[in-house]
Picture 1: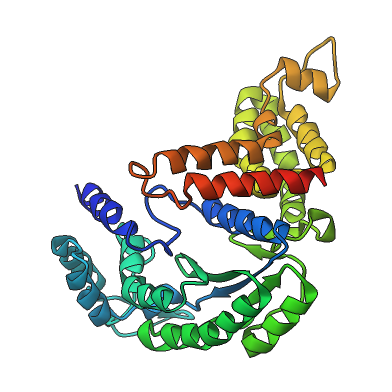
Picture 2: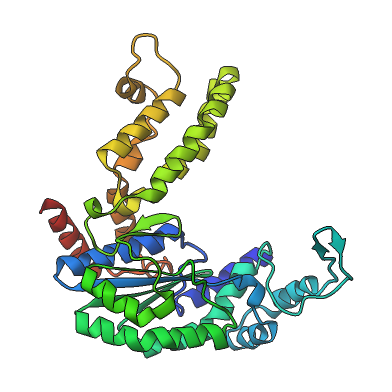
Length: 366
């Protein structure tokens, strides 16, 4: 019942908070894909694109409950759910400090990450300050996935850089005073479609400029800002490959007992980790070949053929959808846009998707 109540409230409110990229029907990949597609679209039209990526320090622990209550009253949050959670939050706690038990105490701030309403509380807490910020800078696009904030600008260089000069200090002010949070300096990053744009952005950002790279990691996916894939290395996926290779011995050991169980472990655990983010930039030939090789090792062997292509063709093809993941993503977004009234998570209209798809296809040809 509580879950249904929160889901109804989220569906009613999320359409008013387009900057929130989490909640019912939204995922990490939605955020990354949208940013990447729009950046590539504008670069293909000979404009610029830039994105800053900030992570908030211990965000759940800094939520002010008095401000949270004010926003709950403002936005019609189910108060019986709010009271239930606050009663559990205010219960006495024992703190273990390196083996020493501190006196029992009550927490006056914070939201418990494991709580069923935690993400709803985060959305509520971010609502008013970030809605006001977005209204002040309509030229820029704000995306928030829980405690990961990205601010993107796309268009002419003069327009984007001018807007960023005003927006960056304003966003810092909102985070510190309205949210009571702090930006993690080591995790702050900035990417841009051209070196001169990145230089200007680094001057604006000061200590939050991050490292000077062509691509960075965002929500577990390597992303650039409209740049060609050949100019950057997918470090995140390569790291995942090395992790899965370490698990290969364990999977083989399980497969000796039960080939079916070994395949299930690989297909539900390893393969999603290896292919995570594939719909954003796809996979190159070497990556796809590596996936096919590792997958073929987990499939039931055939006596008349040991080749991985034949094995995948005759067995259960787990790699096929990964090979066409970008095309499937476009189809999914077109479906969302066509049903935007029934699908609150839709963030595109048919016209923008049509233009983006045309420019994206053109950039692949050339």
